[in-house]
Image (cartoon, rainbow, N blue to C red; front, side, top):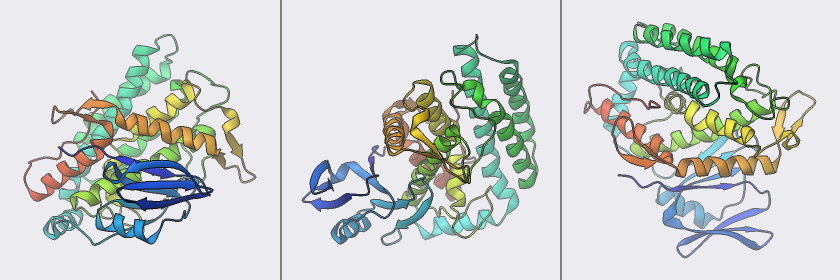
Length: 342
């Protein structure tokens, strides 16, 4: 079983990363602020183009430690690669499936079924934990999502599947504000807005989805799959279509729940956000660090994998699903088993 490793997030404009023997060192204004053994770090994510020494970049390329660059708001900019690894026959099989709608549907259908089921799980969980605050709209949405799961299983085309996915997402996001149980006046959520996010909750979600996509992308590369070539999301230059496919299973669990906890536990407040002239809402540096800390802690929690029945850290889930997908593409499994909340 693969061991869960950490991601090193570099957020300070004054940060400098270098390698000292068998450790990564982070310095700010010539003062050491962080040190970690090299073997515990799987990815380095820099918000903005922060300086890394050539020695660090060479070491990461040689030892499969990913280096990603994102904007301050979490938009992907670039990723540093070493020599390409993985089985070329696996990638060839992946490309062949992506060009066959029927074969693509056999992967995309269970992924979307898991996504909708996980949405429904969050709504049902809210009903159990907060019956006094549960609205009729939440109850109705959960019931409709349950019915749509049956429709999804019967879909015959990718376009039909995308239609159900869009309907279910709109339905879910339409009641997501009901799951905000504190600071309700300061954190409203009427609909999903992306580019740019137009409220604080959407700003949190967009940032979380960006770092989640980066984690899934890294996991796919590790097992030898091409993150650019997916089965549900259409091919587009620069789009990590397969990473976006697989992260659908984790949006509710690793994105939405972290966002709701940050608000409901008052780890972030209204003062942590700025509204720009364009209407875009941006997080403060302190809110971004709080989010990254919460996300990392979430990844360190343990869960029993619903398909494998094995205990593991939540941070391993993208790697496990990437491995399961690779096994399916190689023909070692009859179906691809997505991640379902139970």
